[in-house]
Image (cartoon, rainbow, N blue to C red; front, side):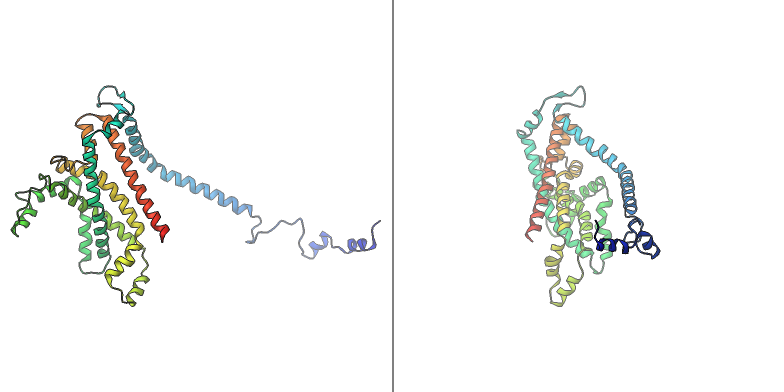
Length: 339
């Protein structure tokens, strides 16, 4: 038997019709979202459909580039890795030899000499290119007189093809009629036969490689300098800090990310990019002092006809390039963690 208080509460409780008449909310009324929408599921479905459309459009746009990358990079790399396990001379049927070409690398004195030459190119080229590129980028980013003409000048090596650059530098380095020896002769100095002297051929080629690499380094540093906050220079100027101290204490640390990219690209460039200039200018001579690992692989393939061993050399060079990238990334990560 219900108590009188329960009956009284039931009698006085408003019904849904009473609430509707007074404009009050009903339990059966649909819930409203905070933004006034009838249901939060509709905008969520719209966002999901938009993400699918964006993903589809991104796939369509990136597909040609990925196809080209696969065709011209992944497929040749895969073919090179496969051929490293075969003995083939471009004719006849390739003969599977297993890891024979890989083991042959370690007993090849000419390979070690070519590797040493490549290491010398990297050591003599990467650090000067990086530092000189940074300084020239700071100059190009300044308001000094003649900067506009300088910006045109430093971009010139990127316009000239490697073959044209090789012809120009061969004429400059000519021992008898070259402009370099003519300039030295004006001071009473007898210049050497740069490209045929075992002592001078390697430094002469390094100078050309640095000249050829500088434009890209300057452009990368110019882009990095645009991200350095301008207010740090204003505060430093008020404290009486000199220009050079600003450059090395403020600008240089703030472009550390660009420096990592430059080191990676220049490491790759001085390992593999020496091939064209060395082939056109010295063909690896004199006495193999300019024969880099890339040039040795080329000669093994197209002079000796040993495609399998040339592929093994190329895979070894690819391993070296990957090691350079990993080392630079590791050092930059350790530097970032220590800050």
